[in-house]
Length: 291
Ligand SMILES: Cc1cc2nc3c(=O)[nH]c(=O)nc-3n(C[C@H](O)[C@H](O)[C@H](O)COP(=O)(O)OP(=O)(O)OC[C@H]3O[C@@H](n4cnc5c(N)ncnc54)[C@H](O)[C@@H]3O)c2cc1C
Image 1 (spheres, rainbow, N blue to C red):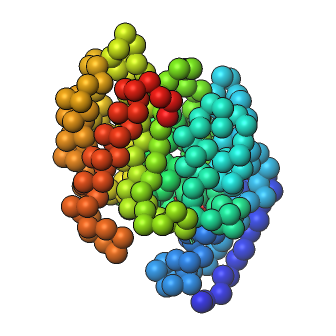
Image 2: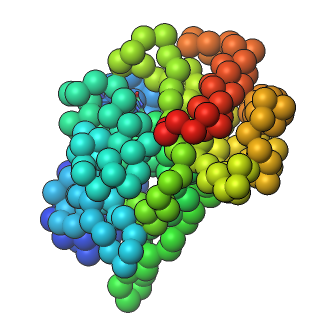
C-alpha cells in the first residue's frame, strides 16, 4: 500500500474544517470502510489524511433545542447502548447494535456509516424513519458555514453523497418521535452477525382511530441509495391496517425498489423478501404489538 504523505489529526473543529479544504484530503474516522478499500486497491490511498476521531465536540449524544444530536464520530457501539437513543429512538439503537461485530462497532462511527454511502448502511433506514437531518460544515473565506440536509437527500448513489469537496458531516439531528408510535427495523441476512444486509426494512407508524395517520417506511440494500418507501406510505396513510391494505403496501414496496443481483442474493429474492418483511411488520403494527 503506498504511503500516506501527510497525516493530520486536528483537535478543534475550526482546525478540522480548515484542514479539510486541503486539496485531495480524505477524512478518516473509524477506518472500517476506508482501510479495507485501500488495502484491496479499490480506492487509491489518499496523500493527505485527516483523522477526525479526536476532534472535540464530534463525539456523543446530546439534547439541543428539543432535538437529539449525535456527533459524527460517535462509535455505533455507543449509539446502541445510549439511554437516550434506546428510549427515544430504539430502532436506531437496534440497527447500530447489529452492525458487523463488537470489534467493528467499537471503531465504526455514525458519520462514517452515512458518508460511505453504502445502500446497505444499517443506520440510514432508522434515520429516514426519524426524519433526521445532517449538518455539513465547510470553510468559507471568512470562517465556517453549515448547511442542513435531510437524510433522504443526502445519498446520491452507491458511494456518493451530496458532500462537496472539503465538506464534513459534523452531526445528525432529529426530533424525538411522539410517544405511542409503532416503529420497527430489521435486516435479513444469511447469518446473524458480520452480515451486510441482503435487505433491510423499517416502518414508523402513527395509528389513530384505527387508521394509519402518518407513516415512514424505508428499505436498505435494494436500491442505489437507502430508500424512503413513499409508494407504500401512500398506500397506508388514511387506511385501516387490513390484510388488503397491507397486501397493497407490500406490492407497492416490491414495485418501488430497484434491487440488484450480487453475491448475497438475486434481485428477485430481494424483491420478495422486502414484501414479506414489510407485510410482517405491518401485521405486527395492526395487532397492536409494539415494534
Ligand atoms: C467486516 C465488516 C463488517 C461490516 N458490517 C457492516 C454492517 O453490518 N452494517 C453496516 O452498515 N456497515 C458494515 N460495515 C461497514 C462499516 O463498518 C460502517 O459503514 C462504519 O460505520 C463506517 O464508519 P467508519 O468510521 O469506520 O468510516 P471510515 O472508514 O473512517 O470512513 C468511511 C467513509 O466516510 C468518509 N467519512 C467518514 N466520516 C466522515 C465525516 N464525518 N464527514 C465526511 N466524510 C466522512 C471517509 O472519508 C470514507 O470515505 C462493515 C465493515 C466491515 C469491515
